[in-house]
Structures are given as C-alpha cells and as structure tokens.
Image (cartoon, rainbow, N blue to C red; front, side, top):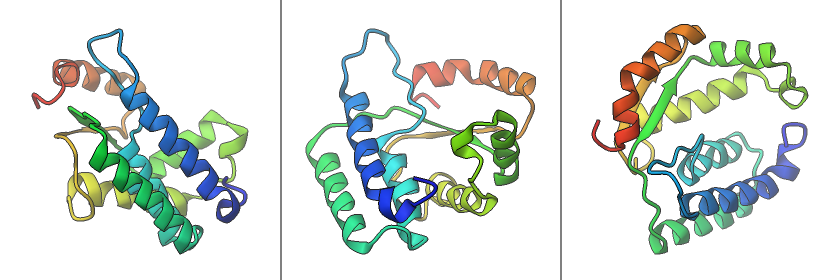
Length: 164
C-alpha cells in the first residue's frame, strides 16, 4: 500500500472498512471493547488522506464514502469514547524508525504530518467531520514511563467510556 497507494488504496481501505465494521459489531466477552482504530478513523483520516493527496481516484473515494454512509446510517455502531493519543508527527516518525518494521521504513514525515492534521481537524478543532463520541486527549510525546502514568491517571475515564 505504501509503495503504490493509487493501486492498493481502494483494496486496503475496503478491507479495513469491512474488518472495522466486524470488530465494532462482534460479540463482547468483556465489559469494555478497546480498538486501536475505528470505522470512523479509517474513513475520516486514512481514506480522506488518500483522496486529498491525489492517491485515490474520485470514483474509488465515492464508492468507499457511499458504503461508509450506508453503514453508519443503517447499522448502530456504538462508540462511547475516543481516546486521542496526541503526538507530533516528528515523534511518530522517530518511533517508526525505532520500531524498524520493514513495511514502515518508506513512510515519509510528510505523510505523518498530513495524518496528524486530519486528526487535529476532526478531534480537536471539530471542523471536518462529525465526532461520534466524547474525546479524551492524552498528550503522547512523552517517554513510556510518563505515558503509563498518564494512562493510570485516566484509567477510570477510559474504562467508564463516555463519562469524560
């Protein structure tokens, strides 16, 4: 996908939309469902970025958008809370390099900057898309120990869902 987003964008994002919908709707055995991303972030961030950057043809964007609209209007997708681990594109880029995952080696800082801006517009400024739940912002540029401390400070809010 990163090597040829124009070719693989629609394929990957269709699959992501399907798997995210499945995760949203799957039966739960625990009282809380935590997901790294959602059907909303897939559409509002990653599909939107592909389209705005010119790497997804308008027809592909229209098809994914129509599917997303149909899904969100016809299927109840409960989201109690969005936890936004807010970190700078530079921090994300450094962490990518530290992880040394082969598939992430070609991700440029500019891509992370574009993704970051879409998240900021959506979850902080609330200027781009509907936010389906309250947002808890946790600054995430810190080291792991400080991040663990921040999680512990917010643990009750996170596990209680929308009681932010």
